[in-house]
Image 1: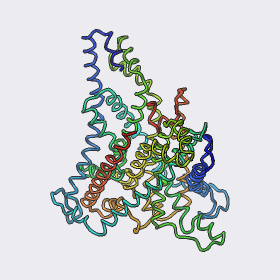
Image 2: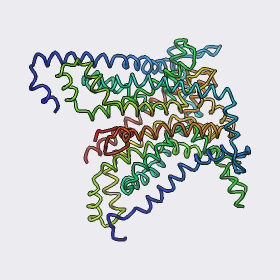
Image 3: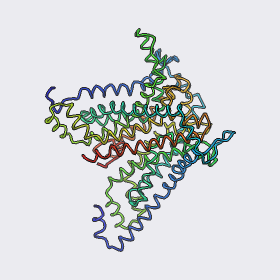
Image 4: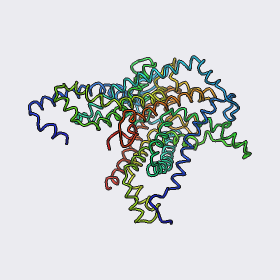
Length: 299
Length: 278
């Protein structure tokens, strides 16, 4: 659209020279960052994939190779159960995040009035301030001699409860860590939504809940779907929550990978785990995008 | 069912929201409160004291880590601002398949679990026999942060009419002059905003630093992690409070930027929602 304005009054030859000059400039601007990403991101990813087919020497140093041993080693009950557990935790995190995020985004977007931006900022600020410290905050609160348990004891409700080392502590930590990724897209789609649709729905269905499920929810589907991906991705790869709030019974893929690289020193096996996780993620995301893209286009 | 008035407040949603805010802030407030406790207890507040802060400021190892983290964040912010802005400008104007491919690759770090990026960086540096140090942390953090800058700057670029730059060209500017004297000044709010955001993210970042750091000095989050793995302590509360306050300050500044630059925009949260696209 801007093109007509730009090209019509200018003499063609000059316009052509200009555009070629400009293209050179833009290409030069792209060159350095592209090279950077190619070296530091793409190349390092390639190394991970290559090393997944490598082996560990006797002295513990990794060497490249062409065997599938690391992948067959992953086909083991211990590892498979851990993989499954990670996916279940990440899915539970997504579901819980959606259940928390939707009402919050809804209340703020449609009833926040002039405090809308302040409320969203109040959610975003602590989120960007240190994930690690926030996980630590939960650990301190829920530990056996923490504030919650001492409160229970002081109120005479018993000897206190064991919160840490349970799956719920880990999943709760993941929700706490990543729920903002759900709130923001849902909030954005609710903000963008035409409020008169809701009014029309109320006239039509006479019930706020029916209006919600047949008008509001479908209209904000895109935001919800987007939020689900944004929560699932970091939740699946996380190892901090399981490390700080859980224990070996609640370890996730992230903990396993981290152990191979930092403690266990079996880098090829760790690479294979990383590749397996990325492949699983890729398949899940592809299926998910295909399943959600079609209905979204209908509206 | 009661006759639905359009204005009616959704009670359930409001209740969830209030509970959510309590859940969000209570653990943080507990950390802040107990950082001022005069005893070691994390359960009973017995009296006000700043002893844990004094302990922190006398712990030279922790202070070294703090300085290291500030240095990492500063250099990584400068680097990713430069590369991210170049990328945003290039991607905004190069519409070939190559441009789109580059755009897709540079957004990849945003959708890759951080542990994968961390592992990849570790293997890359070790493969090249580069000794792990603060420099390797900075390189990894830049790679990770470029995408944030690019997304924010592109959002702002979309709001600047291309004709402005054209006018500068008509007045005799070279493409580079037009870029430097017209487009870049208009990008300043986005640059400051994304700079603050990246600084806060990198300063707090744990996962990438964990995989790419050398031994001494370690970035602050890595050091904190290794001490809280073995339990909680009031000293960590003091460090945590300082980190939370510092990052919160940066983020608040980033969010308030549009007002600072006297720009009326439909939403003050350009930074998060992607700028003036609407």
